[in-house]
Length: 312
Image 1 (tube, rainbow, N blue to C red):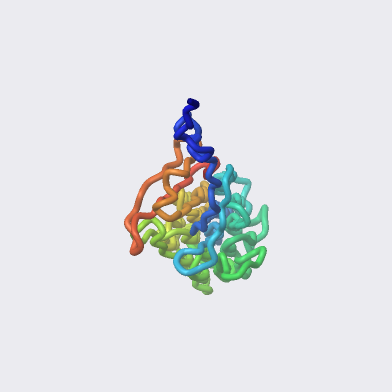
Image 2: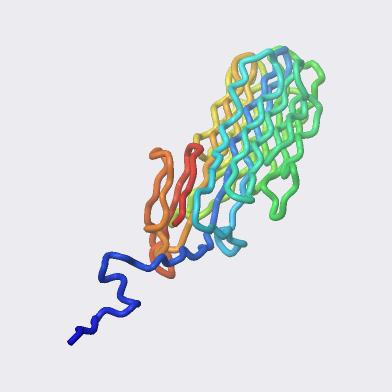
């Protein structure tokens, strides 16, 4: 008498096979900050170099429109800061863009410098400050909504003054505020960099994308502008301070020495905790961690150097 099998067609798992369950798309939050602009240089008897603008700041957290990731790998670009400005006296270099999926944050504009470059600085995510009798460069360039940054501050009066004399320069723009203007009379102090924005995507607040302060005019070493909260570098004489790495802070303006280098940017992705095992990051310098959240644990993917995120 033939024996009937007790294994049906649906029992392939008993022979070592498993069903291929599709990986479902997942919605994630993001913070994308570009590299900050370098501070400007001015080499003459009167004025200071201006502060660099902060890197563009774009985020969905909290309450913004998320990005949907499907199975596969997505490249991540983390923008470097503008290169250190060592002369000839000119505007500082712009920072580099950071990119995640459809989101591009634009590098910060370099601070104004004379006589070898534009005195009003360069446009960018946030604009560079101005030196001389100029208006600071525009931020949020190219324009996005919500705005990714603010303009730099204006420079001081360029008329020659007594020795020691010199006029200040504007601070670079920041994520939440414009760079401050220089005091306009001859001998005026430089403006501080604009403030950055605080974000709790990591689980606790961190401030990013502060503008660089204007440098100190010749003969006025105490007249420099402070860096904006969020990694902006202070201006100085002869050299400005660099923006803080992985904040997108603008560099401080300098006089005769070096314009402070812009700080590098950062990209942070926040995914639902249940999807965490499906994520990986490369290279190993970038990290995957877990953070508490009101609705349970969240998976945090932090990119401090260019790489990729893989889901699935």
